Amino acid sequence: MSVVKVIEIISESPDSVEDAVQEGLDRAARTLDGIKGAWISETKVITGSDGKITAWRVCMRVSFELD
Image 1: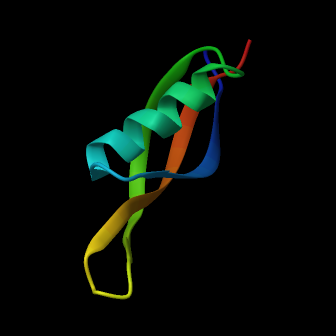
Image 2: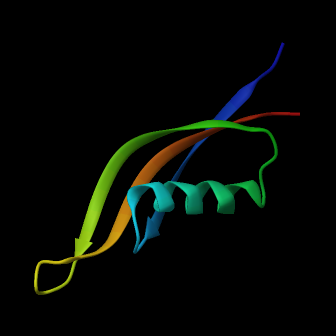
């Protein structure tokens, strides 16, 4: 039987939502083993004063298996 823990992280990318998710997972993988998946709970855009999107931010829950 396995036990899985869930943590919440926020990551950001100037390029896309997909890149923000990948950046968050890549960073989490540096300190976590056994990542099983992620749920995106929020997506936010950061804008400049001209109203153009400057960054994409995601809040996600990442699950990983405990040893």
